[in-house]
Length: 261
Image (cartoon, rainbow, N blue to C red; front, top):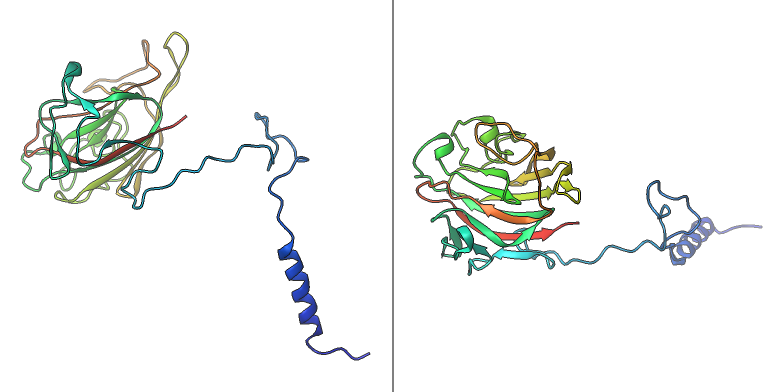
């Protein structure tokens, strides 16, 4: 019997087509349990992740985010002792002036996006140049500072867990450019009495560069002292943005947050 030279190719193509037509399984019920969970490997019954639409750009808030500042209103923040937010909105930017501010809402573990800018003519040096900060739960500071050609102590550099852990690298752009912070904060675990059973952690990315990689936070931020988790701690608290009194003032834009479990 004589076969056409294209016969093997045609046969193989038919097998491939049949394989592609057969639907792929969406899960299994006969695989082993994953240790420490109620789910099997590739478990068909395991709930699928919720769908969250991302922003149109990297600066835009995803669909499930809480927008803290959209360039129009400072209403998501308050001043000291619940006073109206003293920082003014100018040209779509939130201008630091009048003391620290706090979010009206409280947060624990979260993903925070915030952009900040210092001016080239900012006076001072070291910690007196373009200084601000983001305090998670009103106590753990991710440092904001103009660190471009501005020497300072390592654990006070931009991206540091202030007074504790320096950033892995100095990733800031020259002043006059917007700096982009993306921070994943994991709140400390506390028992029913408010005592900390597991410390807080932070992962920080500046301008697309990782500067803290699941860094353990040693306790609340303090100046020129060590810290600890002594005492009682809440499960959630407001986020605080710092006014360090620099001139010209630091400016912020595009602030949004996603609470995390």
